[in-house]
Length: 291
Image 1 (cartoon, rainbow, N blue to C red):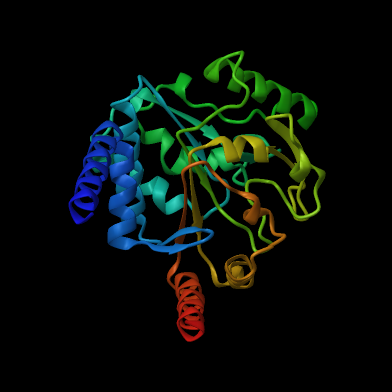
Image 2 (tube, one colour):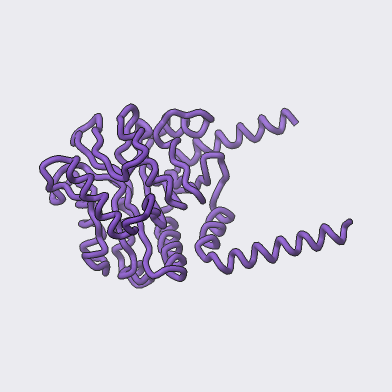
């Protein structure tokens, strides 16, 4: 019996080694989890160390490019990722990856001109893309020059079809970066907005409770088709939403509806990381008492 168990364990170990050999991106993920992560039903929580995020992002994309000719990254909106963009603009990160094989898309956009400082594209362009060795044709901002957001949404969906294939049932980004608002919204999917319930379209207009109200956003089917979603969340104003999200099993916040096929990483600023760690510790003590 013991001999059989040992043989089975050895076989499983060999299978794991082979899987890691065939999937270098999985090695990146496992290394992050083992060295820095804490597990939670919502995903893996990690401290928001921007250099660690930049290193992990570049390593993951590099691993994907060993398996396919190009890779795709959906960028987050808002101000939170600015530090990441500034790091990626440095020579250190520009030289670590063949950026000509990377295609960039956006998870959402404010319906303002790209030259407007409120534009998500504007932030990424000024902090990073204006200095990056990425071909212009690899950069796919959401259009905001159409007479109305509905036309723009359909145009961006057509652009996604052009990259992912006309017959693709849904686009599958290699990695999606998301922020989270004080109200738990992600991309431009806000609590109570009809866009949150869209099940067939890839890109739709949405309405934000704060200006600029008109937005474009990827839908939940697209965000959840990605194997990997990394949340970048900072700011004490988001504490209540984080507490709700990580303490309630049936949470109604939009962020709770993100469920990628492989991993959810929550990169949390120090104060938010401490909140979730405390919740984890309390839950562990509760389990121990019941046992």
